[in-house]
Length: 444
Image (cartoon, rainbow, N blue to C red; front, side, top):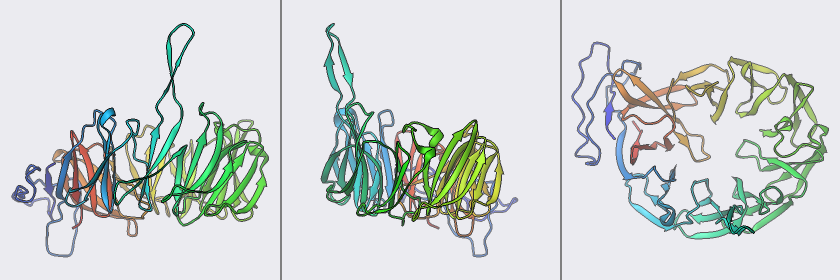
């Protein structure tokens, strides 16, 4: 991956000589320096190098199922053909292999890495059934979750069921029957030992959720009869409960009766007679706080410090305690909460990415066809942003967004990458380009 230094430039400034990266990292080619006309660079300190520093790279065959996660303690890569699947931890700065272990051939995606444990979802081997006519039918038999120690690569535990989420050293696993249609149980387990801490019976349970606030240790469940329970995630203690008629009789696939949690508010959507109602309840008492009406709610989710609601009219930010609308952005489509204070609005066709200040609804930056580097941790860190360049064309500008100030600090240009082909942790960013997985340091 080539890197181009931006430096501090003016419109009439001559192009500086190309930085020579060959002495730092032979595997990266040297890039020619060019002025990035689309960006305005400002500063009050003497000019200094701010270009991303290429650290190392490793081959990655993207033609087979592969996955990677960038954490502060390592880059984790799941790759290899079905009969040679391996999970490898690399030192994030040097690329040294810390450990590499074989994994099941049907492990295809890295899920949560929390509290020093990788929670790896693995599809069970399909069951072959012989039919009366002599033909064979392959039937899936559910999923397992495997816990792997991040320090050693040692497998700690294997449990039946799908991993729903991890919070405060607890993992919530949904255990389904062999058909995948009936929920046997919802189990909360210790992520280090795999031991069951407490279990919620699955019979009659329709859906469940946790608050978006990583410090909130609650689990909210809704049954088919409309009974909503709020429990302490750590031990299963019942905090409060209430039967909500709008959820009664709804199946777990019925999106007309959604359940969600944002901050300290439980949210439900009810569609009746072509009209939708969004109601908010206090998580400690299940007392109704407020309600809003619309033709249809496309989505609702916490985007601290507000509640974000998407409808056909666009995305709006609301006060969690009162439901009062604080701001409105026109145009519907997909919106994603990236971190505290930052929302990514992708519009109707997801053809462009606009970063939005969730406190005010104002545009921070329009990344056009660019995107961001996903953050795999639960830390609130600066967001790495990627912007395709027009002059010079064919490169990607890399910067970091400070959520506190709303300012993007541009670091330089790299070889073109797909909009969401990068993941970041701290100042490090890993990106896939062709057959390589490359790591860069974005620190000034």
